[in-house]
Image (cartoon, rainbow, N blue to C red; front, side, top):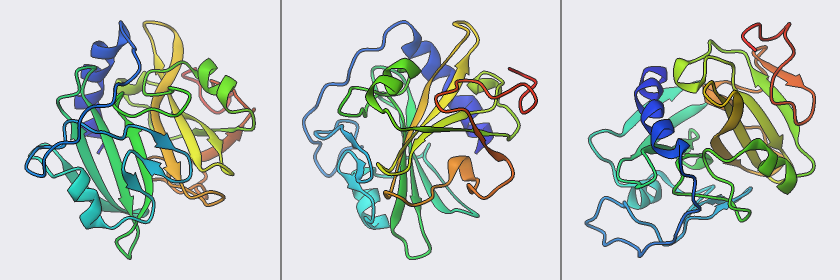
Length: 223
């Protein structure tokens, strides 16, 4: 998984760093297409991403995001993950991660592509300030897993609104010396979610000050 992100994210970062326009709805593809265009591009907290909804089946996920050669699937402590690679996004390559429970139902959807956006037009590469303006009751956490060069060599910071069922993973851009939205995570309202294959009960998941973009130095010497 981490190896896959290292390959994908630099391409996405370079493609989108200079230009971050909002997404435009596109016509729905025919069933034979690779689902490269979508009519619904909205990220809906607590409900879904585009036409894919929490509680949908594996078959429904694969109908909306047909498997391609570059897509991946794996199982970990959080369940099974389908990683659909957004290969032909004109704004840059990205991913949609669909997590399924033991019953084969989607319990978490993560958008790491500019193709999808919230009602406030927040998407991958948006500034944290835009998130803070739109969501006024968020808690912040840091995930103390080994930093990835593709995500700025700093631990990911998460802003979470558990009541709404949405979280924003913030990575670090060394060239701009600031955080950006790397991934938008949708989960069921007032339920726990799995940040990067970790459970929120893990000691690696640490609370920090609300809306903090960096953890305190004692938690993350890299910052």
